[in-house]
Length: 301
Image 1 (cartoon, rainbow, N blue to C red):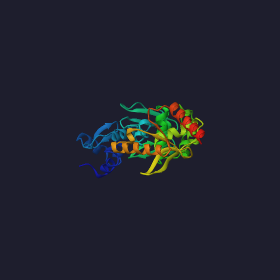
Image 2 (image 1 turned 45 degrees about the vertical axis):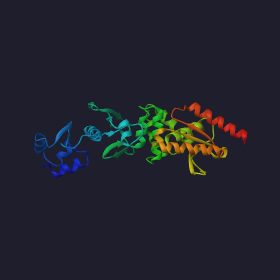
Image 3 (image 1 turned 90 degrees about the vertical axis):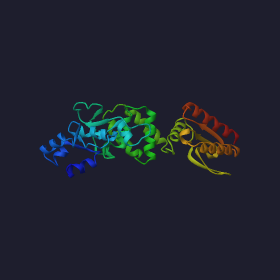
Image 4 (image 1 turned 120 degrees about the vertical axis):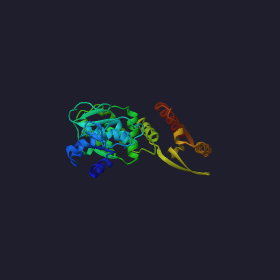
């Protein structure tokens, strides 16, 4: 039977325990007997697993962190832990302070000279870079748009503020971090338009239009119709222009999709100009279409 003290540790660490943690509870002799009798099994050097505990991505990620202590899940692994869209579980990626001490098989490892308490957090019992540090790190390995989308998502979920993100960005930029200009541009764009709307596409279109010199539309504008209240993704109420971003992802049921199409027809009959865009709509097309619509309505009025 496993010692209660060891069980207490493994229960909060996805079935894992380090050699140092085990020796704080039992002696060297007892630890060796547990290993020989397979009551504990070696997962990584000086990291043991309780047999019978199902293997999981989180367990393997924590094992990598424990094997490199101090270390935290970072980059793509951190983004997946934070549940950011577009970053799936599966990658084992960690960061340690100072110089790397060898490689861990199957693990992407990074070193850093910036290791501040405000850059560190815990997620599901796993040490991880803070959401702000994670977003800044992603600019080094991901394209700009997925990072922008992740920044907007983090704001919508109230995981951070732009001020917190800027603080971490400035700390890293002062150390000559690669691609720090990407996060600088993202922050500058949001300073012009902090409204992230209800979805990433809405936020993208708002900033796109402002960057093109067009007025900022109102997100989630409510329009009362004969059949009920309709919420346009974006709108210029004074010009009676509604902007809709359509995707089957947001119309998972056929009945919902059909109902939305009927409401759009009703809006047009009321005199609204409805501009539908999709994920295939290019930035140039969106800007050109909205500019033409505003010019047309300004001429009419």
